[in-house]
Amino acid sequence: MRNAFADELTKLGDEEPRVVMLAGDIGNRLFDNFKARHPSRFFNCGVAEANMMGVAAGMAMNGLRPVAYTITPFVTTRCLEQIRTDVCYHEAPVTIVAVGAGLSYSGLGPTHHACEDISFLRSIPNMVVICPGDAFEVRAALRAAMQQDRPVYIRMGKKGEPVVHAGPIENFRIGKAIPVSEGKDVCLLSTGNMLPEAIEAAHKLKEKGISAQVVSFHTVKPLDEAFLKDAFGRFTLVATIEEHSLIGGFGAAVSEWLADTQMGSQNFVRFGTPDAFFKKSGEQEYAREMLGLSAHQIADKIVRALRRDR
Image (cartoon, rainbow, N blue to C red; front, side, top):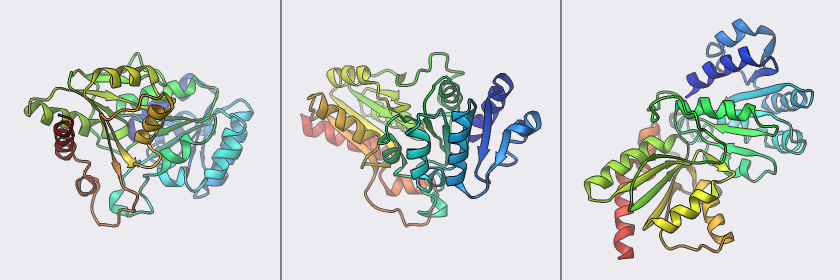
């Protein structure tokens, strides 16, 4: 995902002279092409993320289109006050791009885990929250963000994620979910880098005679409410899948929507991380297995939920 981001940002820099890149002392070689083409528009702000966010807000309020980038907890948790007060309060069109969402940096321990950021960011007024499912969605999300005159948060994985879409996404719209595969029994709503896992879960459900639709719900705020209404009206069971805490994340946002619209439903299952720090030593695949977020575990829990409903 991060390579796609760097490449698409470079193209946007070629097309739009207002695009400015700010980095928190990471990815220096990643942005070599951007720096070579636009040396006056790249700023390494160092390990000073709060300052970087303030600079980005000032640039945005003076007509530029800044993109602030670093590892997820450092570009969200560490500078949350600046995001809230400098960026969102002023509705400054800053695009905040986080790398290593969820448990992408699992092996580096809880300091580098990011399972609370959706909760933080979606609760701030004026903020748009986008969680792309693959590299093509990253490219499309970045371009869509540049068309917004408001703050946008883009939450990426890291590197090596499977590509889901066959090619560039021409119809990407903020707040509009993308069906990836069709099904008739259950609907798997995935956000962010769990999309390949959701697709694999659908394959495992098919082996058990259960037809599952997979949907990339790349935008957590604003939600695609029309799609939710249709899904809860059509499917026996709907599941949200995310690499984020069950508290405040995508599944929580859908739960709130269900309560607010009085569409209370018994056919709803949420997959996410628990209300606990993950302190075991291991990489992302291991962490997902330990937390019940691997494809076979998702499929098994859905089968059990369907049995309970019968």
